Image 1: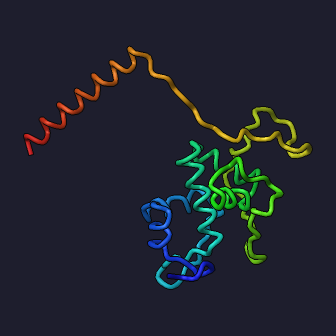
Image 2: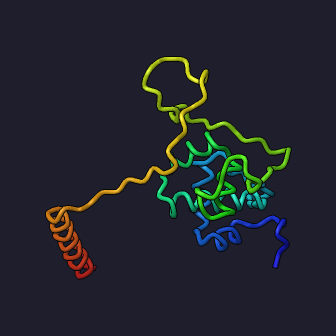
Length: 172
């Protein structure tokens, strides 16, 4: 077993977080804060704080119902340390921005700025940034209740798809 502060390969991180490697690579394109070290041949090595950040992103996306855009906004507003602390504690509610749980990132790593200018969804042309931002909602979960009619239509569509699959399989 590796030491807690050892670097991890993408396969080790994927296994530890129960995520496929392609998901980790995809997240690197969506979250600029994920910056594993890359060695010759492009082999990725994740620092312990990278793993904590990934664990936090995973929890927010899969456990808390956040969208990618919602996690991007949370990273921008609360910082990498907050999301990494979510990964360490396992819950958004147990982390406060000034708690001791928020990990200290190494001094050589600075939080990169997000490239996407549309994350600040101000609809007006006023100058922003003069006042502190409004607190973001902790969760961006959308819940849709199915009406009995919607459920019936979905079941009918599913039945049609199953029949189409059966026909296609018969042709093959």
